[in-house]
Length: 460
Image (cartoon, rainbow, N blue to C red):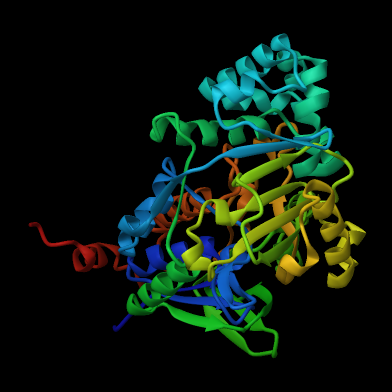
């Protein structure tokens, strides 16, 4: 009897869905990838800003991003990465300060020498700590107060926590700050203590074009601009995917890479406990403005903002990292504002956001002229990252659900890292290895061994 390959549906065309699709196709599975937008990329997608095409949100590659760099190597792009030693700034008490090396850190006026020693000890200790799970049971504010002291917490840590989590910082565990510091110090170790960031010329537009081409070459069916309404269980362990237009298609497995609340809404056959678990995750969202300017604004790649008068929570000057020849000779600035997923700010018009943000920019940079602005665009993402609450890893849902053939894979399952492209790719690789061991349904063949032979590279 002739059998068919397992047919997998992947919902979501971000790096999580794309990497998973690539790996499953190389296990000789038939893969169809659905993306509601007419383009690939998800949070890493690109758009046009004036006459420049660049990333919709700010992204960099670190020297320690092993999974991302491995994928770029597959795409023939790793050698194209341009590495740059960047600088970091702080804006506090209406003043700009450079915090790019140890000497500048020691000169930082808002902190006393004792404050600086305690802050340095906190960062060093966190960067060397390996037993991260114990930090999940301590609030981030209590842990930072204990190690850095009240004044340093109020002056440095609290504004930075509020910048990322708003008042939800009160719910976050110390594992949140550990994951951020661990990633940054891993990059410094890989870069010989220098803050080296990298990018592919052309930004993620280049990466996505190469990855899309590779997916097509590997036989992945890309269904762009086709939103999915519902995923249900049907007979013999298969699943039905209902598109927004009402069309139904049957697959052996479906993997949803959507945020947990969206996945819960889309899967009516989940148990009440599973639905409740998915809906209980609290997410931070983001409003992120992209500004194309006539010239570079700041000497710092990132300026951390601790001044409450500024309406955005950081300033990222991409033109302090990216050669301006890739930006049409212009400056490119991102102004992110992290807010709860239910914030009314999501309903503000682009014009209102632009007016508020430009006023804030004028506060930080009095020399900024509105005539320097060439383009201004606003991105809104309600479900950006789950808040790492106390005991977070104890509540992470399984990838495979109680519904046969239905799997949910998303950033809630990143339990010892931060949301970035590298961690997302690692999550996809881990899931793909798990799915490789799944038995096939009756009448459906599993051809993983044959596929490994087909994709084996010739020995030089």
